[in-house]
Every structure is written in C-alpha cells, then in structure tokens.
Length: 273
Image 1 (cartoon, rainbow, N blue to C red):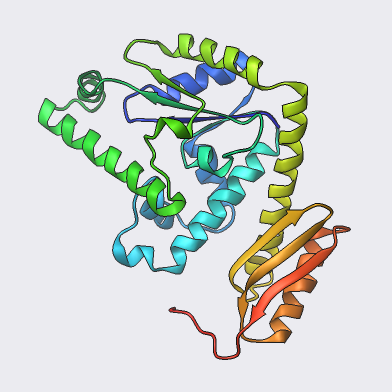
Image 2: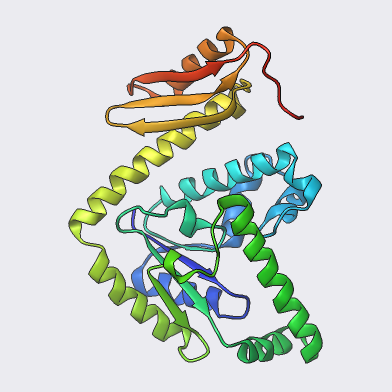
C-alpha cells in the first residue's frame, strides 16, 4: 500500500506532475474526480462536495452536520482508494490524513507568483488582475481548508518530505526526483510498518462508518482506535442502550478483533443540531 501525496499551489503543475509520477512508478492516480466519484457513491450530493472541497467552510457551513459528513466520507474515500494498490493522491488533505505513517511520502509543489500568474492567464484567458484574484482566492481556500479540517499550515514545509519549484522543474523531472526519494525512504521495513498502520486506520474508519452511517447510532464525537490486538471506542451519549448498540455494531465491523468501550454516558447530554 505504497502512497505518495501531492499537495500543490494552483498553477504549480500538480496534476501534470502526479500523472507523470503515477506513470513512471506504475501507481494508481487518485485525483479529484476519482475521490468525487467515490464520495458520490456513498450518497453525498455534488452540492455538498462543492461547499467543502478544498475550501474553508463559511461560518454557518462550519456548524452543520454536512461538514462532519464530508470529512468522514472524504477519509473513507481516500482509504478505499489506497486499498486498491500503490497510489499517488492529489490534494484533499491526504498528506495530513497519512501524516507520520512510515513510508508514506508527501510532496509540496510551488512556483514563483509571476510564473503562476502567466499560467493562469493562459489557462483562463484572462488579464493579470483577474489571474491574481484567482490565485489569491485559491490560496486562501486551501489555507482555510487545511486549517479548519486538519489544523495545519498548508504551506509549512515541515509538513512535507519534499518541496519542489515547478517554475524551474518540469513535471517529468519532478517525477524522477520523487521516485529517487521513494527508493530512499520506502525500505522493506518501512513498507511493512506502513501496511500495518494503514490496515489499522482502515479498520478504525470502517468501524466508525458502520456505527454512524450504517446503523445510525447517535454517539457524539465518536472515535475508534486500534491499539495492540483490540479496538477501543470513545465518545459521548446519553443512554447505556446506545453504548451497547454501538459495541454490537463495532463487533460486526471488526470481525474477530476484540472491542473495548470507553464511551461516556451523560444523562443530560445534548449537542447543537
């Protein structure tokens, strides 16, 4: 389950570099369309995707259940895609989703503002003033998306293994550099560690999905954590019966993996709708 994530500024040749890299390595390309199609297959409407996709939610959107649904299904879609085989994933916070997993490589692509402006002018057939507006709007959306959903600074180089300047390097050259980095980082040991952690993360997501969306059991702030040989549920609800229902659903999703309970029962508990 080798994974390379590509984060990119607008007009920094992110799609082109990801395509070259996927072709060079023989990896699957997981782009915006692939993730949108996957999320829509879960019943999430296109309008909800547009409201949150690499955008900072508005104040009211940030308070809605739609926001929580979007993030859950985005992660579910990403995990489902990487289960299919080695992948190059473009954007959508994937670098943060897989942060600190050994062997997962994260790359950031940038270019000088003037180069980005010329590319946007050519692509959108607009003048320089409009190009600057498009770039500023895109940057603010991506900064806000990462800050709101993941609480990270999108442009912080410390969040990535490698940053490349596509004002100097063409996509094919970037792909070759990333390939060399992969050969250095992805040892048999790190690949084994990565596969084990990804397996746990996928199980955690599957258990949460089964409880929250298949069974629709109202456990607030639900988390499922795999540790050692068991999975533990955390959250808050107002009924012991709901705790038992969540445990039963977790057993269904986890199969033979033992399930432990740390869900708190608070009788007067309620949340903002």
